[in-house]
Length: 310
Length: 316
Image 1: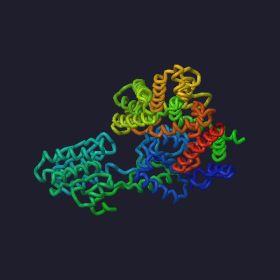
Image 2: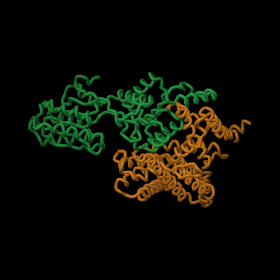
Image 3: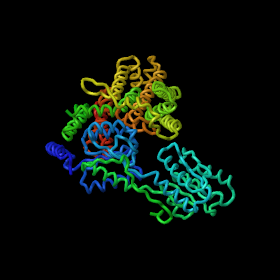
Image 4: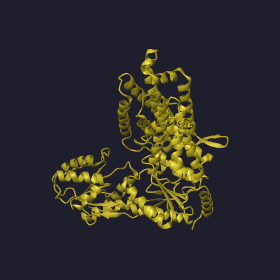
């Protein structure tokens, strides 16, 4: 069960001798979770779920929050490598902490990504499948409009995780001969994305004044969906049956979906599931297994009026 | 005895901290690897704190160093995305630091605005500029030249130990700043301004010009630290330097408790930086909660400064 029994025993003996403060679980595997983003709600869900599994396994978990400081993540990885922990879990773009990952590799300490991004120096990265999320909402749209009508897409190709969503949605819509992509809009996101999406949508509505000329708005994330909703409501066209979908299911989106209006669906990532799956991956590696997948996907959940209030 | 404890309280405290960590972390604390790590982790703070010492010698402050560090990193990264070579990007970033510092100096010395207010305003300006330049995003990935990120990941083999490049840069900055402050007329005049600005002025010290030069150096060092940070994370985002300012000021204050008259000295600042860095390193390794760690570090700064000021009051 424990591959580092010998080192841990030695550590235990020394710690006891020196009356160390950290003697609590010297025989248990020690795992460090390092994140700059603990204050963000999603991250808290990951970490709590991770700790839940860790508790069952009896691990000694050290959660380190560097409060937005990415260089400090590298420092903490170095400190943990020096401390010879059994595994490290990070929740930050691995390309920015390359120096720390190299230090861990040199010491043969496995590093796991928790919604971090794929990197050859990570054992694996546990995250949601962006392709699958886009497939969920684009098929929802296609089904709702009966495979027929003009669709406005909001995309953002400069950011890879969002770009892949656009690719999938385009493929799904392209597979329906009677669905036409009316416009593919890249909103200006410098103010959060809602305001500019609203402005762009207003222009599109003005260009297509006949009721029914726009069947749906598919947005690659929630902000443009919210902006499009505002534009449709401001134009007084909320009763034309225009279907809007987003992705991420942020609180504002859930609120709108719960109202049962035009904004009909979004997709929620299972943050707790990601945390638990990351802990499972750590357990497998500590148990001597080799993980082949460089990315482990945790299923996401379609949010509609039926479950938006949850 | 009491006098001795008060006078050298900070150093004694530091020694106690070292002993505690050595006992609590027998396998990992007192190793060359760990100390090279610490020196590398502290390189950015060292550079900023050295620059901060220069203005604090005159009794001034620079609150804008953190956002200047950020701005410099973002500017360099932006130039990388435009295909500029490393020298150009680094040079431009340092120039921005110098100009920003001169601007601070002019606000303080020519317009006579309190440094606290002037640099609080430029803190906001530089930070806003960093957001404008970066478009609010993190600039990373292929845009950053491999050699730029590799600089922070490599080092020079000195006697069998790989001394990180970041550590070497910080050491050079320390040496240059020390010479400037302790061995040149420039430094002595800065201390004269800090001692009594009127007297310095009457005895022919060109206060305005010196203040501008001092702030320029502080801005330059802040930009340098920002570049080190950007190299370490091989990326730049518009908030990354924000933690540096308070720690730099704390380090100088800790250092001031160690000097005879309570004036900032560069070696004192270095001790201050080390205390902050060693506490952080040791407490992290002892799995002390991140937030508890912050409270502890703040408390230790207060105790040190309190002891220092008691010893000074008693002397009067």
